[in-house]
Length: 162
Image (cartoon, rainbow, N blue to C red; front, side):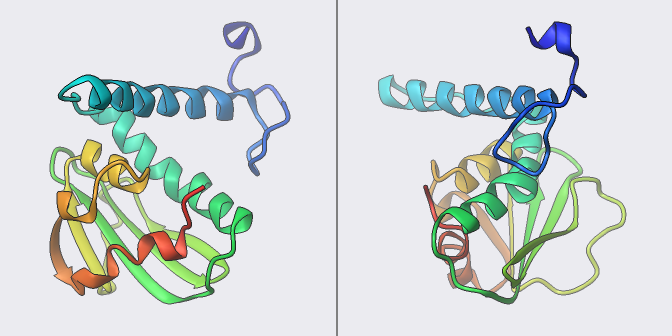
């Protein structure tokens, strides 16, 4: 059905993006994460494919974090700035919590690079970053490279799990 529609066909979604492409993206990411879940339950899971993982990180900031903040009570942001760096690709994402908004300050492209200091900066493979953001890996799976390491678990206060 999706191949007949194309990614720009208007359809209902629970997101601000109202195209069939939203569902293609969402389902690919969910398939990758749930494949990891199944492998984790039965043995040693393999990492997410780097390109899918990097898109899952971007999608978390663009779609999931704002949605999860609207679905469950979350405190207002006070300007908290989180930076996530991929160690297996050029991507860097900087996310700022400003009142009730989640702002993707830069990412996923390496240009323009982040200039403002981050309250916490982490590094990991795109797979590890995505799996952390999806609540599959603990904060200790990432390497804190700057700022206050105690703020990393605070992410899930600002972006409540569903």
